[in-house]
Length: 261
DNA sequence: ATTGTGGCCTGCCCGC
DNA sequence: TGCGGGCAGGCCACAA
Image (cartoon, rainbow, N blue to C red):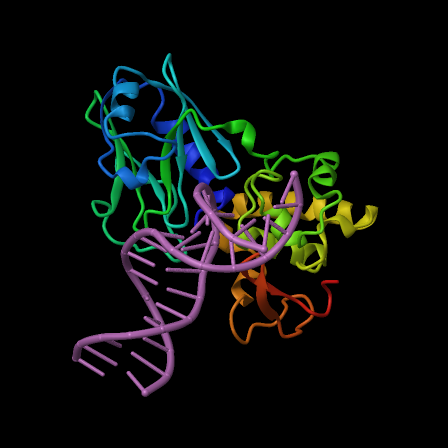
């Protein structure tokens, strides 16, 4: 599913292939897919005649700036893909259908040259927004500083995993990255977020950023070292201990009961 | 304010 | 063989 690494790949695709091309039309027929009070026709009215000038990303939110219009915000939910001129941003997506590109198109932007940028999302968990409130998102997990991470966790009784997945505290951490980073850092997902000492905080910071960089480099959130073992019968790749499965913060969570404390 | 829960949506896979 | 149910999880509305 799209977590930060996938959305970063989408951002790069948009940056390489979608900037500077005059927009001549928009298909936004699915009301469910329009967020933030948008009505059918609003997106077209705002974008036709514009060009995208930059592709940015905060956490899992892709932001396409326009010349003199609003910022187009794209969220991909769990099964959303970005496709530009028929070229998909990522090859494989866990839990998403690999049906032909023509199916499940929820939103499309057409360019004057005949090409298009579109979102394909079988489960419709993503969405489209104009001028999304970027300030609502916390620091991006790829670049967050130690002090900012400390601030995000300080004083919280919520489970550590839930806290780092709170997009208003830290932007971009999804379920798989959370499990992978906590596993690498040797920290129990259920630990109260505010209970980390200075060493543990440093460890989490190092491994959170390291995990994000690794997964971007390897090409997706499914390429983590823990992920392959994240199934019934799976054992910890570090020490061979059978992994524990539970729910933390409402999410299925896998961890090693031996080295995560 | 903080923390937890349920529902949205659809495809897949398991067991009967 | 068909079918029901559980599951995947990002995000939001809502509850306590």
